[in-house]
Image 1 (cartoon, helix red, strand yellow):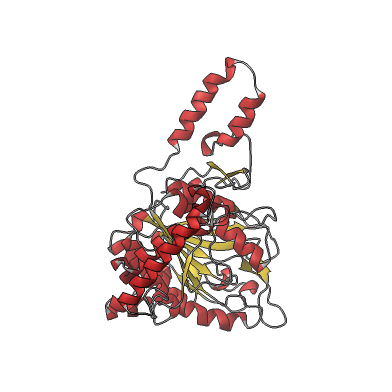
Image 2: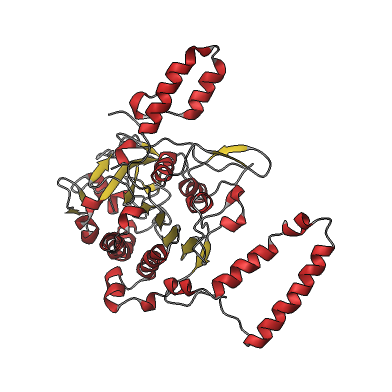
Length: 434
């Protein structure tokens, strides 16, 4: 099976890169290139997403690096399992780890990549890599997938933030060079009210404050050389968005208390479960990207015990989210991604923990044009080899997701300093597409 790591100038029917073409045509001379150029462009057009593109993404972020062996890629009976058992899924021959029976039951809706590879083994750098599709660069901050979606697919009907992070860790999605206005809007446990969206003074005093502020703003604008200088701070635009949000009926999407008791219980009585329920409600309202974090997968100590507790929250929330989206007719337009920054070593350390392993870990995807009931890649059941079969790079996942959203993942944008940057440096994984 061919590796997704293979990068060739012209990849035949599997992939065609306009960046590669531009290099080739730039180096070529004469009109002889026009015929093959037209043929290649036609071939590229055939690879456009079939049907309607997806509209939204829910990213279930398993912070700390979940063990593939105790979640989506168990090797029961093998030495590397250290006793971890497995449960059969709805896809024949595929198993999940013990403790994930509900997720196993919906494997027929999932594409599971068991061979994701990264060059980053540090939490911060690997989180950056997974959330942006780029490795850290000291000269540039890349936008996260949610920021790219917010920038490329704005929804003018949304009065609340279009890019949201629920129960974030220390590295939530950022706007990067696209600007801070594309940073994720952060909230905690959805059982609590959204903070800072109601005034702490009576309505008449609030009105007077706004009137006085407008006087100050006009004075500030008169002191600038031009109206453009006054707008550079984005102060007025930010204030207008905040006031619009504070009075919007769409704020009720955050309130999981408005869901039925049966709905809340099906997602599980946990922060993460409530986060996933809120994500569904927000997507239903029209929000483009919601990230929900389940923390504490950094299991250098007591790996098995910690994972057993964590998947008690993961299993009902993940499975119910997929089922709920499908029942409401939202799964075809919503891509769900479930994974962390890397995996865990096949060997236990002296503290019965597993250490960092970016050489072959699992990411599950569903909905939005993703192929159903499919597994890509495999890891060595002996734990000796660091090379998984059919490896998929992190940037390829980003390119594929952007492609399914109808975003031109090869599109170049100018950074604030005029540096052209493509939205993704990856390639579409054709196996992932329905």
